[in-house]
Length: 337
Image (cartoon, rainbow, N blue to C red):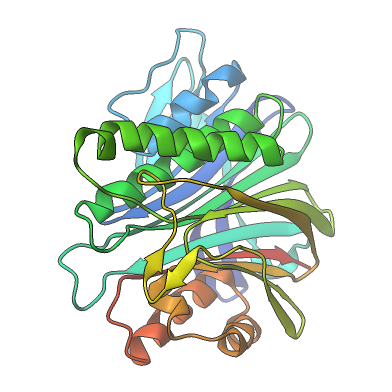
């Protein structure tokens, strides 16, 4: 859903892609890798089977592969591309700004990442996408933090591959029948196998952590179902009022050593489900944050900054202020009450 935050006299404004009719699907998201950032949004009015193609293109695919019967648009870093007989005049019914402070039952995701002072390239990646089924008013929100494993080469490649494929494959799945814990495990295993076969299996060792969230939510509802899925040591926390609970299972052995990583060695995919209620948060971070920022500070950050984009940014910058020299990333999810 969310894209393009702006603070004006009337509060914080959020640019959204609205449903111009009671059919089709809208989406918006953001991808951060060592190669830069991509903000994107779009609308598909018909032929929902093309959603995966739209999302893949927005994440960096070489071309948008759809049939002549597709109608809609994509906007990537502010550049619009129209599909079928959709044109610029149709945008007036598709894009609008809403006042975040005046709505309830809204799920907002915000990733943020900064390169470490000792790094030549950011080996963390983070991403999010929100998808709305216009016929049902149901949303799927997908987010991930991925941290390229130190000690290998191409950490940026491993984390970007992991983040992009997680978002794309989960998005493709939710629109074609939903998601469950077994499906999530299968998706993560397939990402691992593809990355392994392309690199590690050919003698180029690499790997990445994976800390993903998938939220299903009916527009305006005061609760949402979620899954968290992880491999490695990038933690995922649930923040409820004054409590912070780690939902992920850490694969850390000692120091920065982990027992498994996407693309290198995979034993088990950790999945857990639950519910979000009004003003609950999910927070995921890379070890550039978790190594120096404790649970108490995460609780304080959510209370002090409230908005997910401010929480993610300030968690990363606080970690840097505490002396973290590693790449640092955070993803915050908020069910606004």
